[in-house]
Image 1: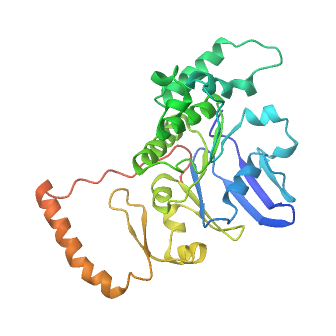
Image 2: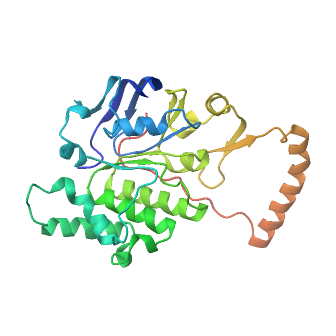
Length: 304
């Protein structure tokens, strides 16, 4: 079911009362891929995701799922296709992991219908996929930030849908950020799940996404493969920041090096010798450079 649905926005204008946040936006989400939406604060990223999940009605334009306007679709039908994980989800106090993940099955249940064997199977599969099976009987309140985020992802996985995630790595340390993004990549590669996520870290977005969408002032400024989107010019326009773009030594993807007011050319040159010496010493201790892993490929057709 996942990985085959076409999600797109056409001429989308969004806002709150008299304030326009997104205006005239067009966007096509590649099915079966990981799409990361990046941009400065208040550029409309989260507002866009809210509209694509039908939480916010557009002032004009439309969001289409397989050619149908999502705001005219029955809520349960849409929830069987798209699952949203907001920035700071709240769980009832004392609820266990298994109970929370089980709530992801609500869209698949009919009025007065009983819990079915297929619901048990979906919950078990979601727990296993997120590595949270051993946490099933624990209360959400007892878990670490990384564990909680994996449980929330398990809940939307139990819906058996494509995924929209608003800043899934917020408030996590770097280890748990990588853990969550690795998990999402596993889901994409193993199940063909289409994933759209808002991220703040450009380098993590470049490393994990197949398709990048850079927003500025409520519009899509650039969209495409990370190597096409992450240029010094785009970073300057979208973030108002000077930068250098180099190849990530691990993934080969673009690596954004921000240049602040104190990062002058002279300071860069002065630091190069010390940094280079440190790298030579490290490599001597490690016996030379480690072999770089091949860049991953994702399910679906190649990037156009």
